[in-house]
Image 1 (cartoon, rainbow, N blue to C red):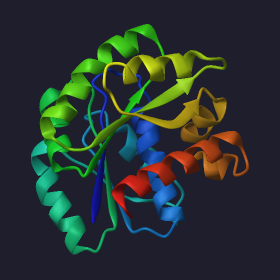
Image 2: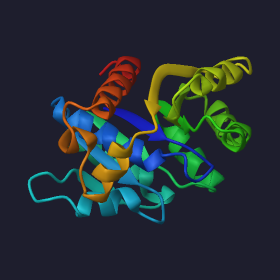
Image 3: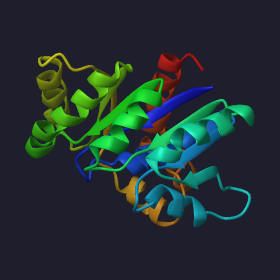
Amino acid sequence: MKKLAILAQKGGSGKTTIAVHMAVCAVRQGLHTALIDLDPQASAYDWNESREEGYKLDAVKATAGQLASLLEQAKEAGADLVIIDTAPHSNSTAAIAAQLADFILIPCRPARFDLKAIGSTVEIARLSKTPSAVVINAAPRGKLSEEAALALRQQGINVLDSVLQNRAAYSHAVIDGLSVHEYEPKGKAAEEIDELFSCVRGVLKL
């Protein structure tokens, strides 16, 4: 069983949107997948609850103190992948998730405040000694995402080549309790998510 933690200490990074889409992608590819929501706002859990019967994921909301036990239960239940959505502005929750994960995905918007704020999340990942990478999210058209990735790499931060563009499909899908694959199966957003999950799956050797 592999464990993927989505970390971002700054709010508004798109962490939960990425978490639920990674979960849907995994299920679509036949992986027995569980989603653990450690964010007190429980947005990922609530999104899952809004989905129609037959399309709901195996999702629970929990505290960081429950995480180790839940991971053990998921392993015993035969899960292939567990995705952990964490809380922003909570170093302790992020640190526990980082230590228990096999890979950490750090969403970051290519904007000044986000790039400056990412340091605390990167440091949590570094201290955990768990492999990690940044994914540029909500990127506008133009070269801004490339410039942001370059700036991060120059600081020695691992940045994935996969980029998620700023597309309305993500917002429309999530509002309706859907993923972009269900909202617009042949759209660009679905292609981007597939590419990102392919990269993550390769790192995790799933």
